Image (cartoon, rainbow over all chains, first blue to last red; front, side, top):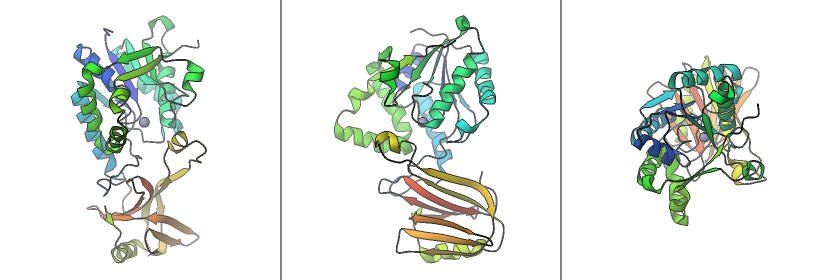
Length: 217
Length: 115
Ligand SMILES: [Zn+2]
C-alpha cells in the first residue's frame, strides 16, 4: 500500500476518526504525505456534554482544536479547512465545490483519495462531499484519476455495493487510532463509553472497510 | 452554559427589546435519528442571522422553559430550553439539551451578526 500521496476529503472534523484514522496512521508511518481537506468545522454538532462544556458558538473553535490535535497524532501535516458550514454542503453550488477540491487534487497529485461513497453515507453533508470529490475527479481522464476508497455505512450499502473490497486490519496502529478518536473528545467520548460498556469497541475499531469507487463513465 | 436562571434570562431578554437584533433559532433531533432508529421521523430547522425586532420577550414554564418574542407582525417561539449563557460579546445564548447532553433546541440573540 505504498502511495505517492493520500488525500482525505470529509465534511466534518471527526469523520475520519472511527473508520479511517488507522489507515491514515499507517500511510503516515510509511512516510506517505497525507492531506486532509475538511469542508466544515461541524458547527451544528449536538454533543455539548453533561454539564455542557460547549455551546453553539464555541463548538466550532473546540472542534477545530480537536481536529488539529487528531492530525498531529495521526501524522497529517497538511490540513485544509475549506470553510463551509455544517449541514449546508448539499446546498452549495456543485461546480464551485468541485473546483475547490479539483484545485487540491491538482496541487497534491494524490495516488489515493479517501472520501464518503455518495448516496450511501447517511448524512447529507457526507453524500454531498463524496459527490463533489467524484465530480472533481471526473475532470481528469479515467486512466489518470487516483484510486478512490469510499467509506459507506447506509443500511443498504452492502445490498447495493456488495461487500467492501478493501478490508484493512489496523491493529498495529490501534493505539494511535484510539488517541486520535479521543482527540475528538467533544464528539466521541459518549460513543466510546457506550462501546466500552458493550465490550466490542476494540474488535470494531481494528478493521477499516472501504469500497473502491466504480466509475460510471 | 449554566442551568437557566429565569430572572437573569428575563433581564437579558429585556435588554434586546425594541431594537434590531440578530437571531439564531434552531431545533434538531440529529441527522442520524432515522439511521439509528428506523421509523423515527427526523426533523430539524434553523435560521441564523435573521434580523428581527421584538416588543416583548418572555421566559415561562417550570423548566424546561419556553421563550416567546412578540414581533410587530408575528412571533418567535422556542420550547425545551434548559441552559443559558451571557457571552463576553453581550450575546444571550439559550439551549435545550437532552439527558445525554445533546443539543435539541437553541435560541440566541446578539446585537452583532453571529460569525
Ligand atoms: Zn460526519
